[in-house]
Length: 174
Ligand SMILES: CC(C)(COP(=O)(O)OP(=O)(O)OC[C@H]1O[C@@H](n2cnc3c(N)ncnc32)[C@H](O)[C@@H]1OP(=O)(O)O)[C@@H](O)C(=O)NCCC(=O)NCCS
Image 1: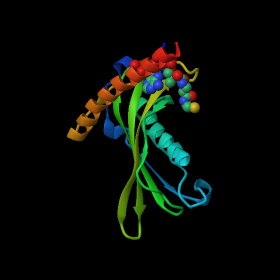
Image 2: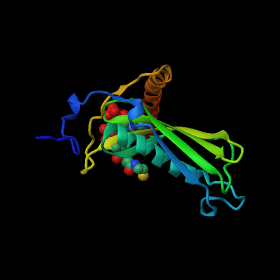
Image 3: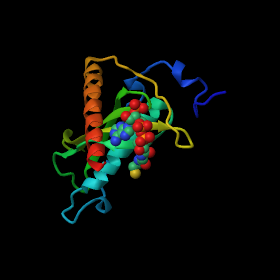
Image 4: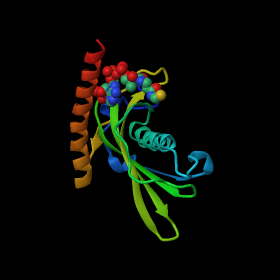
């Protein structure tokens, strides 16, 4: 019997997957409906795009349905205007048991001048689930480049910080 929804091979013998296998890119032209009265992209709309871009890499890494467990702190470094071409790139930094940390970086590309400006970055955690919402194991990440190795290590430290913060919040509630 195969308990891994969508997989022909049991997940525990699925080999680690390279970061490059799930790297994703998405492009959006900012339209008036996405903007505030000053013509700047709404922060919530950018978060929506970040969530979708992150989910693309999480789906591709896990070959599974996923849910967003958390989005870390986001800095909006500069405004994005109506008509701008927004590029979002996502990749898996590290996989744990059922969860994965995905990094998303957003740029505005000026296709006339041929320049790019970094506008925001975020780390998201996605949890793989089957069609009934039950958590599923995810394949580990095989790092190849120095940059991927650095992100992998940093993701481990951020997971510890998240766990600590979650524990602190739960202690305050009880
Ligand atoms: C996220 C969710 C799946 C976690 O389920 P849970 O049963 O509370 O969590 P568990 O303690 O079993 O942890 C499952 C995994 O999620 C991770 N996790 C749980 N809460 C987390 C959080 N706030 N941030 C990051 N990771 C989190 C755990 O570290 C664990 O990872 P691991 O298996 O790789 O070690 C659950 O809370 C949920 O379904 N939330 C709603 C998701 C959703 O609808 N998102 C869209 C936003 S509207």
